[in-house]
Length: 219
Image (cartoon, rainbow, N blue to C red):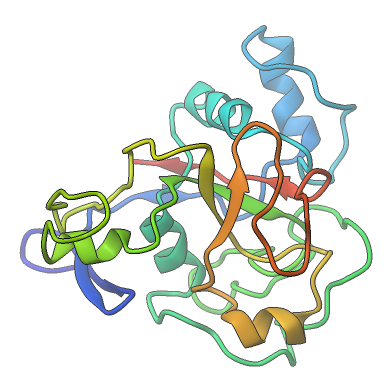
């Protein structure tokens, strides 16, 4: 962190700053989620298990995170934590191994643990972020000559301007081969998903239903 206790980071070639935050080590499990259901705050979507929540809308994911006192991570928060502040991570050997096939228990893929301790960054489920999709959002930090026609603060950038139903989704799931994901960018790739139907704007997968969950941040 700098003298103001802010984290300096580069997103899509643009220098930004993040306030310190906490992020869950693993993805939210069905058993964790159902505590919120029992409390009467969340919508039931399945039985208790140690497997990650894997078919949840953006709205319901955010309700859970808010229930525990947090929120979904912004795209910048997710990318900084998942990549250990180093941006993209290359290669499919070792921790970033082939993960296609089926869901596994939460924290099965310790592919980020060597850096900031995050598990299941690649493998298990795609993860919702708080951000609406805009192709050139981070260029709005530099100038209002971007698609949103606004100047975005370089501190804690978050695309909260609703431009449709498309949201930024990060990470890769059990549906992806690591070699396929690596070619796109394991950490930096921006998946896009409809926040209600879970339809995906993805060259390989038409829907993330059955393969989308979340982890939460505390700010």
